[in-house]
Image 1 (cartoon, rainbow, N blue to C red):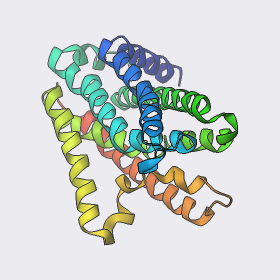
Image 2: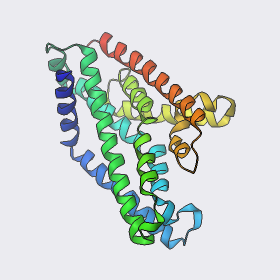
Image 3: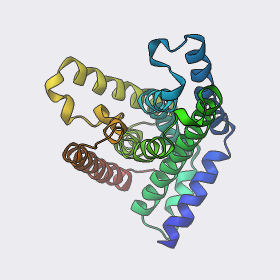
Length: 245
């Protein structure tokens, strides 16, 4: 466990040391501010009311921004290290490949949590500035952001699995994003399969908002997302284990 903790810490430091991931966090924070300004300019049109702004930012982030960030992180932690040869030095250490795979996945999860935290802080501050603290349900908003990491897990493992099939970081990003879009498009065209696709639940935080929570629906979605996470972890770690570098 200590090895995995140390490895995850090294991997997240590796990500944050790259300037583009620092810039991405700044841009993520600007989403909350720009959404608030757009909502104020539109005077509540197109659903961008300041009181609902943290949820609007969360919807944009989980549906579009975070999947792109995940694809980029998977490309840099997996494929880019294959390109520059550093992965060879890592796999020769006295640590199993599945542990190495796990540390990289944990690093991506930590980065996405950090991005969500930035979105939460900027959107809440903007909402309070424009509409006052009385317009914001802080506990409900915080809960929505916390649970939103769950549907990101299968997306992270999907991108990590795709990275095992690619030889360049650019192809990993393109194939991950393209694959994500294809899955979303197919589930939209064929609504019957929509409930069975993990990309359909990036907005599952909405189940936690309101006077009553549909516990049965929440549990059903949770089981589905956990199943996808475990399956993709198994496939991705197996591919990482068998890959020759």
